[in-house]
Image 1 (cartoon, one colour):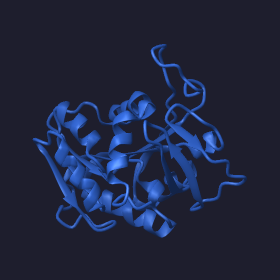
Image 2 (cartoon, one colour):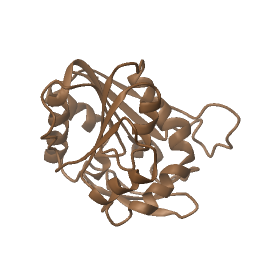
Image 3 (spheres, rainbow, N blue to C red):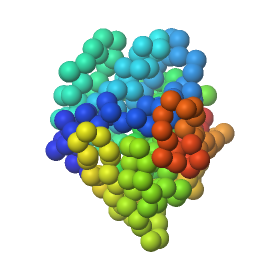
Length: 231
């Protein structure tokens, strides 16, 4: 997906994405806690929305992305104490080895087309992470949600999911955004993390909790996949 072309629409969706904010991001942030005095890398930070939440919780944040256009949307927000950098794919050249305490990647690897490039990205994150540091990934859970519709997502129906397969889903907001991604499943993420040298890999499938939202199945079907591992 070309995020340069849809930067403004994606920024709008990010602010309105009900289940991302109610389920995905809380689950991801729980993998980082506690936050005080940590240096956190947001790999594929997009509009910087998660960077700013982490900043507000007391961490220092570096957000990197390959899309210069989408990084311009960060100028619409208070970005004090957040550093943004535009990078080349799988190249955090400005950052030394063993530099950050934690790294996260939210809805990023679904844009990576090949297993080879997936491995390159994960190896680069491993390089900049301190020993004992944790890397956490969150993505839509295609393996459980294929063909279903939820509050913020509508998944196309794919007869047979295979690694690296092109898939399409609708991001639902005041202005819907149709995106084309690539399918990588739970086993794929575990495999590339292990190959890069990560250990203590965990998988979580958070559900919607509480009665303040009229769930469309998110409270029983795991809409998201959260995979974490330690260096």
